[in-house]
Amino acid sequence: MTVLEIEVGDPATPSRMENLEFLINSGAAYSAVPADILKKFGIKPPVMQEFRLSNGSKITREKGGALFKYKDRVGVADVIFGEKGDSNLLGTLTLEALGLSSYRILLNDRVVFGNTPLPAITIIDKLKKIGPEAVKKELRTKGFDPALVDSIKSKKPTDELTKIVEALPSLGVPSDRVMFEPTLARGLDYYTSTIFEVEIEGYDAGAVGGGGRYDDLIGQFTGKRLPAVGFAFGFDRLIEAMEQNNLLAMSSTATRVLVTVFSPEGLGDALSLTSKLRDNGINAEVSLDPTAKLDKQLKYSDRKTIPYALIVGPEEQSKGVVQLKNLKERTQEVLTVENLIKKLTK
Image (tube, rainbow, N blue to C red; front, side, top):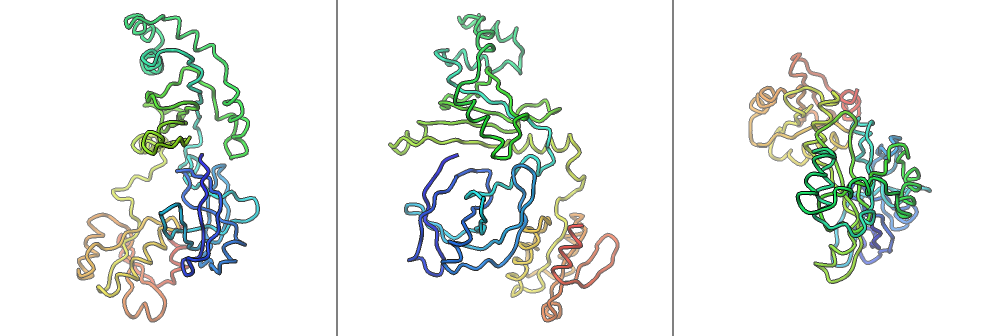
């Protein structure tokens, strides 16, 4: 994680801003700012939203919009009204949230390899893929001592790794999910210290994510040394692992509801409704052609086997309701948006 100082303020009064330190983490979907600071600027939270933390627990927080400025970059983004004890980020994308609770994190430090030549490290990194005998054979063929494998296997965690492992439970990562793996190398040569990979028990195609610390990479482009940690998931492997664990609903489409557009003038309302459904965990899409007749939009929904369609015409708008059509059972009902969300999240 990297700490950056970022200015925060109210979009309506950009001249008044306050500096805050943020933990920068690509796994966090929202920034959290202490509620007293946001309310001091007059920022009002329009909604309450539930968030899943990295330890699997859920919390409810107020959510609004704030102005963020970092150097010469300025923009408005969603912000969480943080309460006491909240860090300045709330990570919401976790393996537990996907149902992949049987994961483990393999951890190593490039320092463990000492003066081992990079080509030899690259070969040792193939241990899981081709096995120890094949690795030793390749080392011998390339002019390296095969004893390197056993020598590196006997290494102990560095002091830096020990500190990281001790800190992980405070971040919601159970210590029994983390394992020191001295032969883990990660193929890229720009890592300078900590490296890690994430594996799913029973999924043998390889790690579903990985990353590490690089102290010098950013400096090659900026001329200023800026240590950082990078991490990424492998989307295809995550999907495969979820399929293998029967965590994906078998459906010809992931979309649960199509929000139809009654007229071009109603496109904005349709987009807002679609966004609200998505914020509540409901897979929704809006009709691609706002000029298409309603019948054509419903046929599109049928063709894609989308189970529900929403119709919001002038009559529904005047009453503050929506019409929900069950395209499989050929039934329909009129609901408030609140009751619609309750129904579709059952």
